[in-house]
Image (cartoon, rainbow, N blue to C red):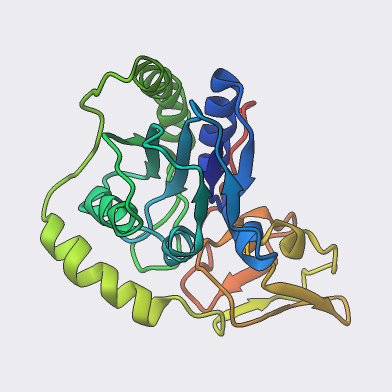
Length: 255
């Protein structure tokens, strides 16, 4: 089984591609938490996968919450793997993930990363990639994921993790500040271009958005994935002034 969390579709593509290769089922992490479905029974030789994006060089809090709540009945050292998607690099997110597993008494020797198109646009200086770079990253990701799938299938560890530079600063200082101050739904708003279509509410992985009077209303369970912004067909959702005039991105196999 593969548990995944995804905002703009990058990690969803990875999870479902891997699930097809392994003939596995996928379970969406946000929905599992919301609906209190965090207990699973394992088969003897079943693999357990976790696929999620790196948020500010760390494990997204929603993924951490899920792992802490997760109960794997009949766990007998079955193979566990983790695949993180990132725009550029991951810092110490792998060590954070491994620590979470060990707190549960689990172990993993397969923790990898795949570079995918940038989608975080709520910080100054952060924007989506141009189309040529977006295309290149997606093409390269196919090859990278294929190698990871082969490694997991053969239970053979490979070197495929983009730690990057200044990891202590990014993962030990910036990441905690991000979790404490940046995960905030208050700056979200819809412009007059909003048609009340409800796609933002449908795409929100934590079901944090409701539609009232044909406009989205954000609750207090935001995880800062920006799915609502990227999937809005009218580009009618903004995050304060940070996202104005910036690009939008969702994963598509066709571009």
